[in-house]
Each structure stands twice: as structure tokens, then as C-alpha cells.
Image (cartoon, rainbow, N blue to C red; front, side):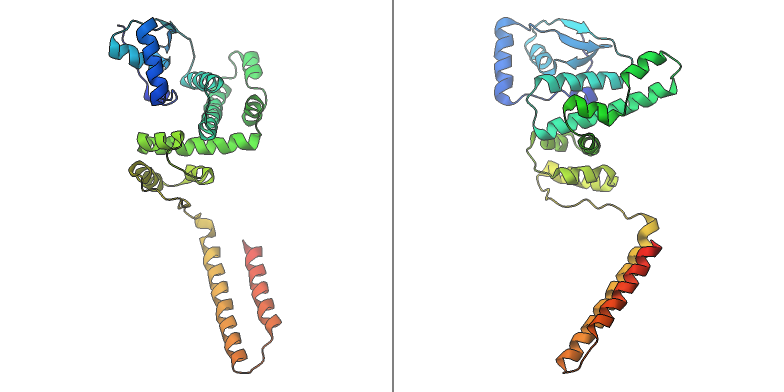
Length: 269
């Protein structure tokens, strides 16, 4: 049996079948052999992972076909398009694939721009128009959805680097994690990513917003806002105490003072 190279990045794009579907495929291959060839790129498996597992375990011969691509990004795009076209994907899986497609396409487009003098006409045809718009039309969603999917895919990729099991649980729906929070995790710190991945893997994850560090530029304004609010709270308490004692206060003046301070802070941000 020929040696097949398994690339982990590509393998993760070839979802494992559920137990019943895998059993039926195995029974079919044991009875009829492996009818469909495995697809390779430079000896790397890019389609047919489940068939390869079954054939390897039972020493069943298989055929292969090779495809030519100029880069890993092109292979990724081919795998994604192939999977989306023939699988019943869950919403989170479909968003993940769309986001990966967008990110791979952006990398490929950037590389082609750097060598624009080569086959310029063909490149312009392939990459005419913004990436998000083209993929939005292809997948029949909005360009905003494609950009959100890109963030989601980045977060899932980062989680997968910390824990393959956590990534699997997200994509299979075994763990419920809000997609807004997943998108937010695309800009979270490595420590936050690792913490979330560990909790998902251990089964202790609870929905919460990721801790996103505040930009240094707005920290002084946040502190000033905190002081303004504390000052208003103090004035309000004093005002409330005077009212309890039968006194009178100018509520409008207190509120106006607070509004003026907020407006000053707003103009300075």
C-alpha cells in the first residue's frame, strides 16, 4: 500500500463521519472495495480521509488521483468548496468554512498582488472585485456575513491550536458557544484562548464574554468617566439625604452639572 501524507491542517477540513455513517461506509468498502479514488496533492491527502482510514485498517487496496495547485491556499479553497458542495453542514460548520475560504483567498490575493507582473490578465479575472463581495455572491449571503465568518474562523483556528478536542466540540455542536463570543475571541489574548479551549475540552466552559484588553489610548478617558460617575453618585446621595431631612434641592442643577461633565469628556475623546 502506497504511503500517504496526512497534513493536519487539511485533515481538520475533512470532518470525521458520525459513528453510524462511518459503519455503513466501512461495510460498503469491505463488500465492494474502495471504488472512489483518494485525491492527493504532492502526495498529501486532500480528499478521502475516511476511506483511507478504512482501507488502511483492513489492508484494502485503493486508487489515487493527483491534482495540481500552486499554493496551500489554493488547496484549502478546493477542499472547502468540495466539502461545502457535498455535505449537509451545520450553521457553525458552514460559517467556519466560509470564513476559512475568505481568509485563504485574502492571503492568495495578497501573494498574487506581489507578483502582479506574472499572468496579470488571468489574475484580474480570478480576483475581480472585493473578496467579501465575491464570496457573498458565491455562498448567497451578505458581505458582512462573510467578514463575520472570517473572525469566527480565526477564533476556531486559534482554539484548535490550543486544543484539537475543543475545536471538534465546537464544530460538532457538542458545546454551545455563542457565535458573537466566538467572533470576539478572534482578537482575544493567547491566555484567554487557551483558557477557553481548556474549559471546552474539560466540559467546564460557561458562556461569558472574552476579556478583551482596553487600548492604552482610551484608559485615561475611562478613568475620568469613572470619576465623573462617582462624583454624580456622591452628589445624588447627598441630595437624597437632604430630601429625607425635609430639605429642598435643585435636581435640575445636579443633573445639568453631570451632563456638562459628560459632554466635556465626550468632546475630548
